[in-house]
Every structure is written in C-alpha cells, then in structure tokens.
Amino acid sequence: MYEYICLKVISKSNEQAPSFSQRLSTFWTQMLREDPDAFEMVYAEKSEFESEGDRLYREYAITSEIAIQLGKSLQKSGFEHSPIDLEDLYSKYEIVEPEWMQIEH
Image (cartoon, rainbow, N blue to C red; front, side, top):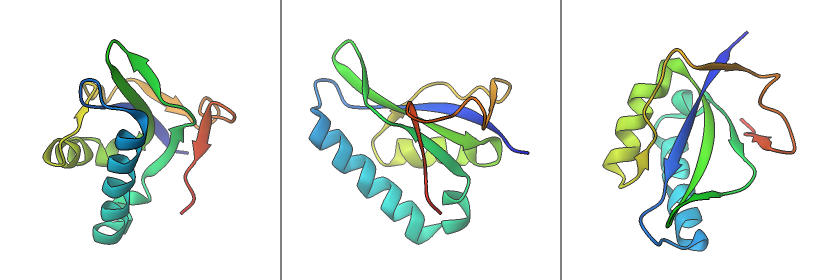
C-alpha cells in the first residue's frame, strides 16, 4: 500500500483563484502529456483552494518517488511549494472525500 506526502502548491501574491486554477490545469496537463508515469503517482488533490495571507494554495497527495522531481518541475513552471518532508506520510485512508478528490488515471 502506498503512503503519500502532502505537497502544498502556492499561488503568486494576490493571484486570484481563476488565474491560479488555470496555471495549475496547464501544469498538470503538460505533466500528463510529457510524463504520464509520474502523473500516475499524484493520488489526490484538495477539493478547495485555501488561503494564507495574500496567497492561495492547493494541496496534493503524491508518492515520495516523485516528490523531489515534482518540486523541481513546479518551480520551473513558476510555482512555489511547501518544503518536501519525505517522512511525513499519509495513508489513503487519511485522504478521503469530501476534503480530497482522488485524481482519475
């Protein structure tokens, strides 16, 4: 059974939800096309954006195998993310609806 890392992807300062959502969609679509095997290791995303100060964020449940690579790809695409903690793991039983949406593969 997989265990997952929660990675918080953070918007630009004062970025509105529609713009952040579009940038995320573009990033994930590109990843799906260029590296479908890595995309398979993205298990779920939070159902809603959350905010911290003037920034939005969305959390993703990912496998540790892609954590570092994904972090680098996000940064290259102009996203910030939370620090990657390879020891803070969650089971699929902690990543459940309605708070989380499992990503269809």
